[in-house]
Amino acid sequence: LFYQIKTLGKSRFSFVGFLFTGGWMLYRKMYKLGTVITVIMAAILLTEIYLGIVYNSFLTGAINEIYDIIYELGLLSSGEVSSALSEYFKGLSTEHFIVLTGYYLLGIGETVLQFVCGFCANRWYYKHCMKKISHIKNTSASKESANSELQTKGGVNTAIAISLFVAYMAIQFLPGLLI
Image 1 (cartoon, rainbow, N blue to C red):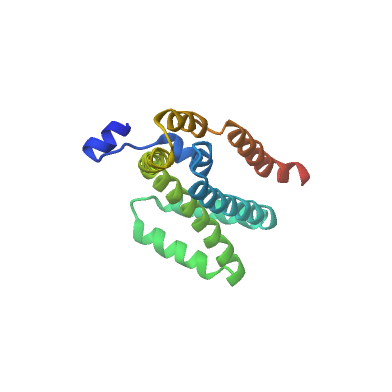
Image 2 (image 1 turned 120 degrees about the horizontal axis):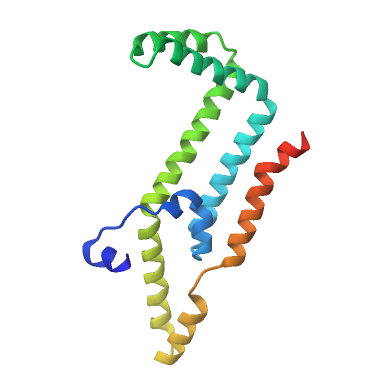
């Protein structure tokens, strides 16, 4: 893949980067970008969980109502669906409108970030590796010390992958156990 990026300037979609976003980057020792993306994804996830707990009955009812409107009128009658949805949203309080819109926007934001990571992860990793290798080669006293440092600094961070998995599971399932 690195050869393809270097020679053709083309990369391919990273399914792992798509699924695990910042966690995959931290696993690959891209700590700065991985931390930023992991914090963003955690904030989105925690906000979705908070809204899901605090506004559970409202969101469940609202989502069911929206799906009922779409399926009753059919997807082909988009004008009727739009006017029925418009009427539904007009009937919501400001708080409920913000909660419902925010809940959907969080999901969209999460998906967009996942696709950005999926499309860019391999290229980001390539650039990260080339920068690290270049730095090590330029600052090492000899070829042997450079190779030794490359062996030490290369590889992946398995401990962080396991830690993130445990933290994700706790965040995802703990609120359900506490309720």
